[in-house]
Length: 222
Image (cartoon, rainbow, N blue to C red; front, side, top):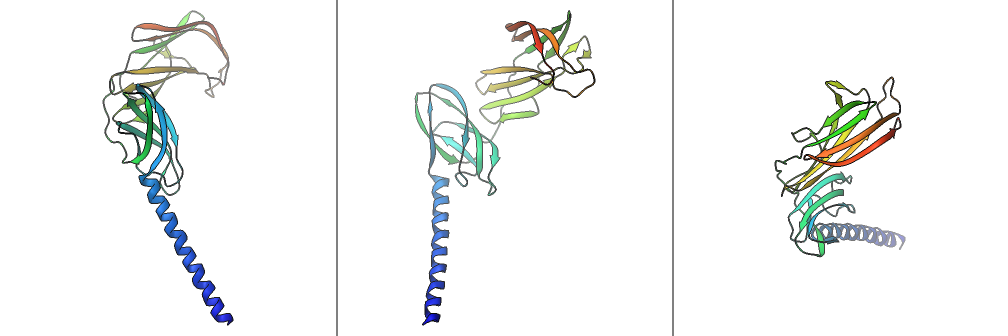
């Protein structure tokens, strides 16, 4: 009697385990082919972060029927997407489904703007200029959007500032639109690095876009 009961229990455990595996597999297939979420958009470019549960998508993401670029930033242990940056250009206002898709492929040659930062320190101008070529430190790279970071030591004549650095984060879309973000950093571990006071002037495509006098830039800050 006990042997029969034991055999029945063992068979039941095996059946339950098989059922659990079947349910997990079915759930994974559904996640790979079904809707992951939605996003509300207005006409124009949109770039947003998307977190995903494990197993939801492995290649890329698709927003409605729009051309979509997916820059995967982090993956789960099984290789599925954990966090990605999604770029689309909406033509109408609406709420669009987000689904799993193949990873977007291809790139374009971005037409970078001209940009410069002048830091006037005690009457001595130090100038950092955005390079004309795309950066190698990329945040977005695909058929719709480019974003790269260039870290530049500002120069006085040909002498670089010993510890100030200018970060240009430049985004360009495939239709030519874009933006430039500028940050000045005073964080290098160097002898003599200290608080600096300067007048700052930022120029993009020949136009003055920002000026500020008497910026007291403390050491170990950006």
